[in-house]
Structure formats: structure tokens, C-alpha cells
Length: 365
Image (tube, rainbow, N blue to C red):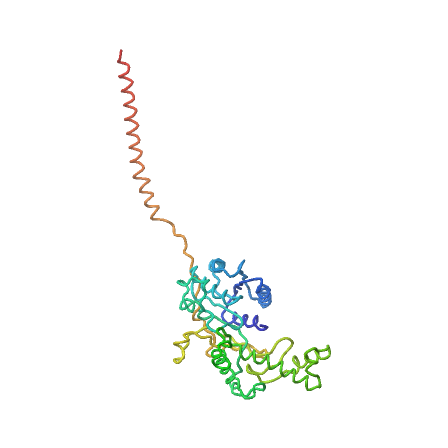
């Protein structure tokens, strides 16, 4: 996301971070994205330690990466990769004995319950759902807002005119869970992301652009096989003329970007009595970067917390082996003289026996 580097910089200033570690999975897929972000963070005077897997999709690879993190005592980790990679990093940090309380940072929407999805690549005994949540508490997620600001969620939408943002979200959530129409399992979604509003607004933006061009006299057939002139009309209608109230809030474009609010979410314990039994941990919106590009507001819902953060384990300094030295001295000053005495007596005895033998030999005829 366009604002991610400045948000990370704001977070670093807020918490006093002097550096972060960027932990990267499959570099074929995510390498360029990670290096671009690394450069932008460097441009904002934030020191970045780049740590990447040689090959992905293996817990042993991720474990080696976690050993490197532990050795370097990195405590702020920006993870770049798919959900499976991020799960492996959290799990591997426990397996190698890294102290809990790492600040994990991620970007973009995740599927619901992604952290504790069953994953055959993880050692189940060492990375139970409770273990994973314990290690991930306090984590920060930077993500496009999929809902309008408070106070706008009950306004009727320009595209789905019978729905509000709130009612549309509830309808989409039910359809994902129950299928559409309800009971059609072929359309139910087992793994879904909270991007219903963005997806709907994207379809609406295209529909409004088509309507705008058709109103100028362009035919549907001309839209199916557009000339350069018709294509430019559609391009202008979509990029310049789009401006409507969508399920995610006001929708309009600046260049290639749909201008919307960006949220800072933090993993915290769920305090809601009605839902905390089924959802003990939630991603709470604790900050917002407004669409007009103003400063990052970090006072939402009480603001960010660093209660979960813990320093890395202290290294055990090598202690001088005084006790071993004492034992060695006892052996050296007591046992050794005794051994020397035994050797001396044995040698004297052997020498005496040899002389006696020689004397006996001289007396024989």
C-alpha cells in the first residue's frame, strides 16, 4: 500500500524503534515487493535488516530463519509472504526459544482465523492455537479500510440503493457462510477475507463507468470491442469521473490508487462478553490514516499498546569454572605427589630386585 512506509515510520517514532527486520518468504513472488518497501523505509531514515528464506514452503527453512532472528535479537518483524509463511515464522520463533512478545507487522487483509488454521507444516505439539495466539498478541496489521467511517455505515449506497454499508456487509457475510441463495453449498466460501465491500465497490465503479460511456451514445457492441477513442472514454470515466458512496466509503481514484482510509489493527484480547468465548482474540482498529493524507491518528479504541512487547532473552555469560579449578588443585597438590611416591617406591623396588638377581648369578658355578 502506498502509505505503508510512512505508517511504519510513524509507528517507529511512536515506540522508539531504531530498526526493524523484514522477514521475507518466497522471493520469487515477494522479493521485489519486499525490496521496494525496504528502499522506501531506508529513504525515511529507518534501518532495515533484510532476512529472507533461500527456498520457501519448508518449516526447516523457516526454523533456520528464526534462529537468525533469535541470534540477532530482532524484536520488530515486518513479515512479507503468504499466510502459511507467516504462520511458520510465528511457530518457528517459539520452537527455537525466541522470547515471546515480538512485534509482528503485516500488511493487507488476511483470511478469517488464518493464524490458527490447521497446517501440516507446523509441529502441532509445539504450536497449538493457544501457543500461536500467545506469540502473536500485540501484532500490528496495516490494511485498507473495508468499511466507511463511523456515522456513514447507515447511509444508503449509490450502487446498491436498497442497502447501507452495514446491511450490505451483513448480507455478504451470510452469503459467504450459507451460500447464495442460502443453502447453495457450491457458492459458500470456506476461507474468506473481509474485502466484501472493496470487491463490490470495484464492480460498481466499472458499472458506473460503463453507464457513463453508454449515455454518450456508445453502443454495447462498441464497448465489447472498443476503438482507441472508446477505450479512452471508458478510461476517463473510470479514473476521473468515478465518485460515489460505496460499501467501503467514498470511492474515487487518484492516479492508479483508489483513495480510501487505511487502518492500523492490533491483536488484542476480546473484551466483549457476548463474543469473547468464540473469538478470544480480535484485531482491533487502533489507528487510522485518513484518505486526505493527513497524519496517522493513533488514539482510536484507546490507541496502540506495547504491553505485549518483551526484550530478547539475555545471553548467558560464560562463568569462570572456580569449582572445577578447586577440584583440579586438590588433584594436583594431593593426588599427584602420592602418585609420584608410588612410582618412586616401585622403581626403587624394581632396581633392588635387579641387583639381587645379578648378585645371585655371580655365585653360581
